[in-house]
Length: 289
Image (cartoon, rainbow, N blue to C red; front, side):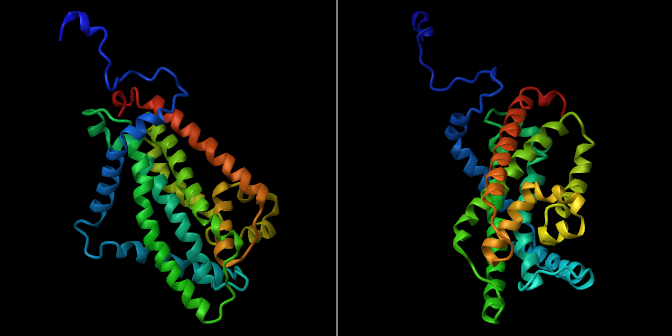
């Protein structure tokens, strides 16, 4: 290349430091979409390797959890689920909750688990947590399939369950859960690079979060029993998504448009904050991991 032409060459791609904190750089993510799908394929395939039951593990976990919740919370604690069979009530909540939990737990360790590859080759780091959220849809789909099976069984046997006009919002509920897991996971992942103790607290915190997210009880039950602390559940976006999911699938509870808008706005805010902090951390995380 001649010296005269070196300054006028138009490069196809140019990698530069991110100087603008609010630059989400979504165009670059789109350019690397092939790599994104490659990571998704890797995540799906590696889960099934060297396992005896393979994807059956995804069925065993929600089924056993639903049985335990039914025995403890519905039979022993006598929490009523109305006309809906307690097992199906719990299975609906666990299925949508597991998607959030999987996304949050995996993305919260993005920098620590991928430090090796991040230190060797450049690509938009946000592709890694995005691939986790997409690949976990496979696990969610398997668990949703078993829920549909039990739904049909209880419906044929006369259970008072039905779909309603809000059922079309079910994909939106799944999307909100995935984005909440992504946003919260990226925030924790960025903090873990400096504060290693957070890795220990994540699993413990997820368990506590489950109890205030109305996974195993109706929101109305918490309001009746502990009205002074009802705001903890009422304004928890996770609890709203779970409660609404049960309503659109089982017609138990109600749909609140104001809370839907509130949950949507909170989700976008958490996602935006997560992306901003994640992009800032990726500049120098390799020095602290």
